[in-house]
Image: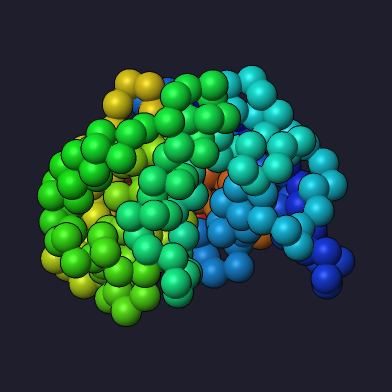
Length: 251
């Protein structure tokens, strides 16, 4: 599904190399977690995969189902099945949540050569998905993320993911700023979307998120590379001992 080989990326403004040869493969039905110290390149990896500007790929490749992601515009990546849940979801004043969701869903359906979803079918589906995520009707009527709490913004991101049904979901520190109850709700929403045809790449600092979203594989990233890969026990090792021991192992 998602395959990254030797990916090297620099920040254009500062001419600073951030990713220095990332190798990663996430298969269909798999959940992978990436942990690492601040500044290790975790969020940069998510931005580059989704097509955010300001970065220059200087080497390597990234493909989704064998298709070159790096050669696509951001909207083409989304239409091909890539979804990024932001660490800090942006507010969009003046754009209603329902309008945003329906426009996004139908834009992707059009890109795939499918018929647009009718207003009635869309309303039935979005209400069902929102109920599962404990999103009330008032949130659906408000402008996108405007006046939302941190937990509401993250649940709204998961609602978008549920509506768009992507192949590959990247969660960039979705647990950031969430209390225990909000984290559980968001995690339940993510777990409900797990399927044999969908992959997840979960970027996080904290083991507590992984207690709810149980990954198949955990990667440790530092200095622009993945330096160690293991099972869920690797996240527990980080939680108990920090990164120092792991960094010493690969020094």
